[in-house]
Structure formats: structure tokens, C-alpha cells
Image (cartoon, rainbow, N blue to C red; front, side):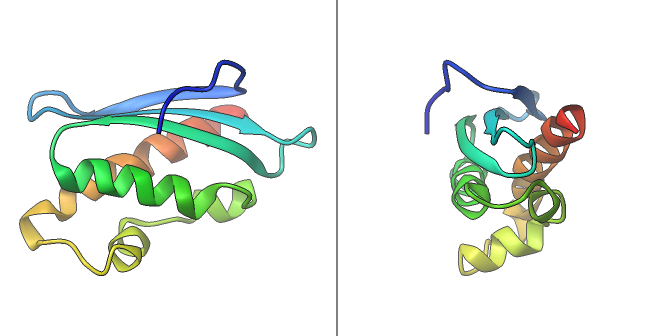
Length: 105
């Protein structure tokens, strides 16, 4: 968790109306093929924050291609499930990740 001072891309998204917001800072390797570092700040419910944390753990050191394919179901599985009413909150981290990486490549 936190911010990167040196990063290649930054993105933000979520649903401010309900209080769920995810901000990402991503540093790519020199070939722009792998995520060398990723930091986040997440605000809102526990599911939103846990999903952003899981997403960052699941993508650091991985290829951009792998990260772009990450789904909310992958995150939910990584977290051993989420309550049905909170599954929409796990969308925000993957949406912001995809937005950031599409801007980077």
C-alpha cells in the first residue's frame, strides 16, 4: 500500500458515490513487459481495500499480459471468496488496473 514516487502509469477509478475508490501507481520494467512495482491506495469498504491489496500482490513481478487478464473472480478466489453483495467492489481494482495498463502499452 502507498504511492510510488517514480512510476510509469497512474490510474484511478471506482464508485465515489458509494465511497469506493482505488488509485494505482505502476512501475514497469525497461521493456514495458513486466510490472516491477505496484502500489495502491484504496478507500471504501473492506472488500474494496482487500481486493486492491490482493490485485497488487497477484500482479507484482508478473507480465502486463497476465495482469490484463486478471478478473474479479481471480481476486475473489485469491481472497477465499467475498460475500455476494460485495463482489461488485472487487471490480474496481481490476478495472483500474486494466485502465492503467492499457494507457501504458
